[in-house]
Amino acid sequence: MNAVNAVMQRRPYRPTGDLFDGADPGASEVLADGAWVLRGYAAAHAPVLLAEIAAIAAAAAPRHLIVPGGKRMSVAMTNCGALGWVSDTRGYRYEPCDPQSGKPWPAMPASLLSLAREAADAAGYAGFAPDASLCNFYQPGARMSLHRDHDEGDLAAPIVSISLGLPATFLWGGLARADRARRLRLVHGDVVVWGGASRLVHHGVAPLAEGEHPLSGRWRYNLTFRKAR
Ligand code: MD6
Ligand code: FE
Figure 1 (cartoon, rainbow, N blue to C red):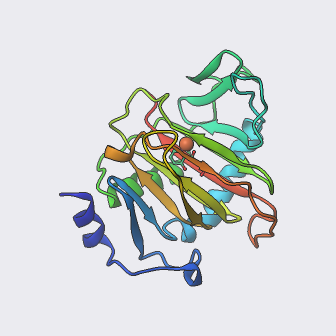
Figure 2 (cartoon, rainbow, N blue to C red):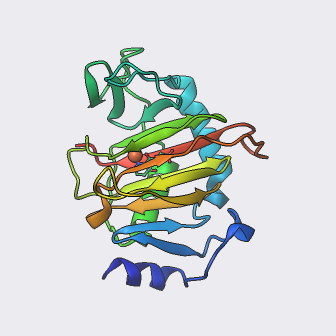
């Protein structure tokens, strides 16, 4: 079954717009070949997800990593799962333990794992078994420059990305870094699934605008699930 049929069988397509911010769990949009935005897919689960994020942050504090060039990221990051993504002056990699504490990353909560699996399945990627979830914490002004996610051992697996809290402008580029990026608004509850022909597309996040979200205050959270090994 291809991705279009998988989504169509599960959820009838309905066009969306900002009117439906986080409130239309039935809608999905094709972003590119292999890439989907499932509008509002996680919205109903937000209270549980936010509680899990708080527990993860309590066990492994979000921190501003240093990129190999020496700059400090404006987004604070932590991880859950068997492996966690880290960066320092030596490079980017996945590590089984939090370098800050020496302890294993907190386990991936079952609620997060099952939601990520279901979203992947809805986009036509059955059997997604993530072993890493990067948890990103944005405050107004924080941004992520264009990058590709290519540190994972299994590039055949998709990435599932859940957005919560303040809205963001997602930058969706191309396979070449110089390709012009589209701007896409991601709001609370939106889930992006991408793999296949889009797996190595460049992407980023524009500086987060000031705002106040009823559930998260001045924060945007993003969880990305990957098969790192
Ligand atoms: C973010 N996300 O949305 C940053 N990467 O805060 C990512 O860098 C990302 O959303 C790969 C796949 C999905 C993503
Ligand atoms: Fe990324």
